[in-house]
Amino acid sequence: MAAGNLTPTSYIQHHLTFFSKPVGDGGFWTLHLDSLLVSVLLGFIGMGFIWWVVRGATAGVPNKRQAFVELLIEFIDEQVKGIFHHGDRNKFVAPAALTVFVWVLLMNAMDFLPVDWMAKGTHLISDHGFRIVPTADVNTTFALSLSVWFLMIFFAISAKGLGGWIHELFCAPFGSFPLLWPANFLFNMIEYVSKPLSHSLRLFGNMYAGEIIFLLLWVWAATGLVGTGFAAVLGLGWAIFHILIVVLQAYIFMMLTVVYIALAHEHH
Amino acid sequence: MNINFSLIAQAITFFLFILFTVKIIWPYMLRAIETRQKTIADGLAAAERGHRELEASSKRADEAINDARGRAAEILAQTERRATQLVEEAKSAAKGEGDREKAAAKAEIEQEFARAREQLRDQVAALAVAGAEKILQREVDAKAHADLLDSIRRQL
Image (spheres, helix red, strand yellow):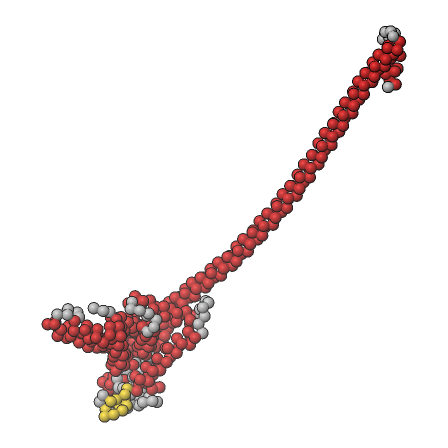
């Protein structure tokens, strides 16, 4: 951003610009390298940390790191145990839930970092914009929710067979009377469309809103000393409140993932 | 990128946020972690204690069994000794009784023998007197010859 023409609009626009790279004809064929880079990095950091701790785990009295990871895994396992009753949860669902929770939590937590200070670093990579909150990118949340969606269909088919799944598309939830088939199918289609939509947009909306509020506060901070004071105090308040949102959204995303996969196993 | 107040506001906010996390959030997590550590440590210590107690009590049980075995052996030996002693005592008592009976029988026999000899002596004396009477063709005055008869009897 050039000095002199700093307006609130340009400031916010600047911070909401992705570091994108077209890989084809543009439009759909564009990569958001910032979301990709940060999310992959955070995935490695989060799961790497757990891997590092678990590798040196002891059956005796755990050190603080191990106790923390144990608490985390126990918490996730407890949640999954309450929802998923369709076979061995340790085979896939519980580890997937742990991955989703840790990853989304870390991606959400990027919101706490002071954007303009981070921009000082990220400008070395991209001068045109670099967004450090991957979950405030609808592409990231859709990538997650569509992965869950495919898993949902995969588990539905593997639990009921292809025939059973198609049978349920037409014969549930209203009944197997032939006249009801269109209604059933329509209902199921709405469900299949709304699940990934609500799953991803809930997370995206929360994180995007959080980011915007921070940006608005920083715009206020740029107006002068009074604004700086107010913005700092309100920013702190919002950051503290945002802890709840960050954790809650990660938790909700994880729970919905488990619920969707568990529902896919259910026979009607 | 120009330097403006928003940088300072962000720095202050971030600093205060870190302070908040350190002061308010971190202690909660640490407490949960330490509680868990303590629970595990206590559990392990209790298990260890139980293990040791089991070991000690099994050792005590072994000792008690050994002790009982030893005492049983001792009692058995004592009993055997006592039985042998009793048998010996019975044997010696029986032997003594036999000896006494034998002695008594011997005494009786001797007595009987003496009485018989006395009788025989009397009868021989009477026979001798009767023989003498026959030879003398007259009655011997027993009273008058008591001394004589007596000396004969004693010589027999």
